Image (cartoon, rainbow, N blue to C red; front, side):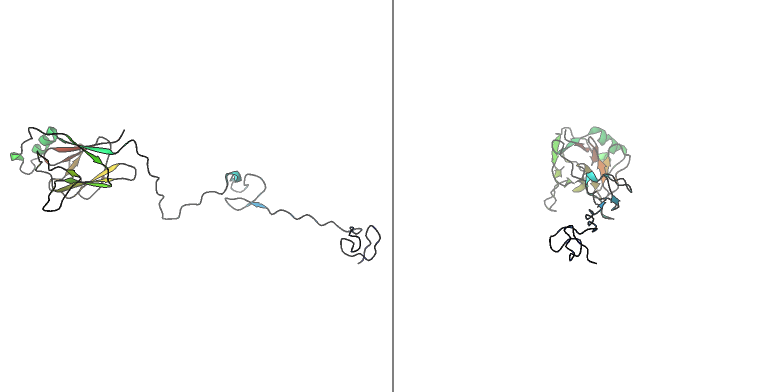
Length: 218
């Protein structure tokens, strides 16, 4: 149907006049296009304000973090160093020697506590450090070498292992040593091939008189 425009151009059709471009009489103005509805970045529901009416998520916070994949544990962030490496302090301990005699260890009757010994310190600066006695014939070179005089006869060539943890601490593992490894005041040696966590000040007892005290950095 032909409708005149405001200038009475009767041949005009559609919403606007083909002659002068004016709007036709009675023509309805086209509704402005509606903006697409905003979606909640968390649940995807339509929302009008800042907070989602479905899940309550605050859109001002941006997209939520993606969930961790199933079955994949989150890796803890590495812990900053507290001022330096741990230290292992090696001593000849008479109290441990007396305990070994009381327990009637191998050759207990022939053991003698050394008349003189020097305290030694080892820096724990690797992922794992062996405790034992050096043996060139067997190619054994432990990082914590207890073969210096006075040599403890109860220490195996490969006695135990110190293993660093992700949190910066250390575990001790007995390597099926002949006389076992004792931690602190435990009455029995720790089970072989099993990591046992150590804390600052813990004492590892090996051989006939040797103790190894772990000291954490300040």
